[in-house]
Length: 105
Ligand code: FES
Image (tube, rainbow, N blue to C red; front, side, top):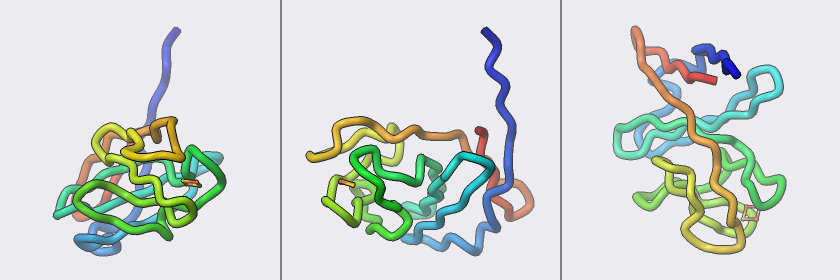
């Protein structure tokens, strides 16, 4: 089976400063952009435990903390570091071109 992917523009780099989160929707996909110590990550925007928007959560060295029940997700692999969430977030490839952030979906 061939899986087609595409690079989509998420936002400008200066819209997600260090320590900030940014959420956006592309068609049916909801994606989170996180700037963790200057490194840009992209994951699913909605927590895998329930319907919580992670862009309203908290970013730390450990990852993004869900605002609802406080699971923390590692941004490199999407894995939850604590209960109640048990399912990893999907993580997406990111590239930066001319100060704009692109995500491979
Ligand atoms: S909704 Fe995120 S941990 Fe429950």
